[in-house]
Image 1: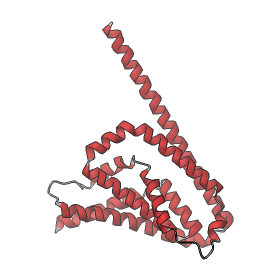
Image 2: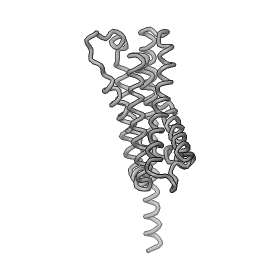
Image 3: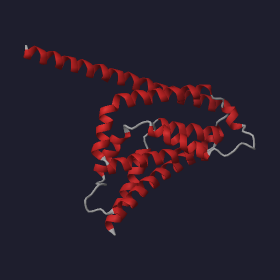
Image 4: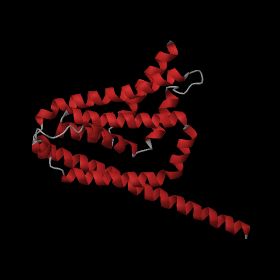
Length: 230
């Protein structure tokens, strides 16, 4: 019984810690909570939680393969993900918060759309795998004595921890939502858009910098190899 409780608790803590860093998806949840209400923000977090669970499953089922894929394609993934963030920041700049505050009553529920966008927004950042790998090691999540039902409990704990985190965050953000008028939400959109744009710009800059550094190192190795052979 004790190993079952241990892996469930470890999974719960991993789910919280993976979700806690306030990156782009956290800003998206806050923006949607302020503009649309608590539940659109929460379901965005639900999508992010399922994305985190997906990466946790990848880590547990194929640790060496996943790590090798990320290391081999890290620059491409970083640059592509950064351009996706730029597109979203432009969307925030052009978005009118008043339209969200005054939605017509016949508008259909978009919780599924919120969840899907949260999922894909999070899954576009595969570098979280390295954070998950370190957490798995820290909490001894992958142990040889664990059986299948232990891991079912552990991965369920990861999803539960993520959902609890987003539930608490959207609860508190929704509490202060009443203090924001349309202009305040417009400013929030712009501020979040600028922060996401800066993250994207840094991602592109660091990706291109690493690409040129790797290229120069390869040229130096080729030059020295050719020199010694001659």
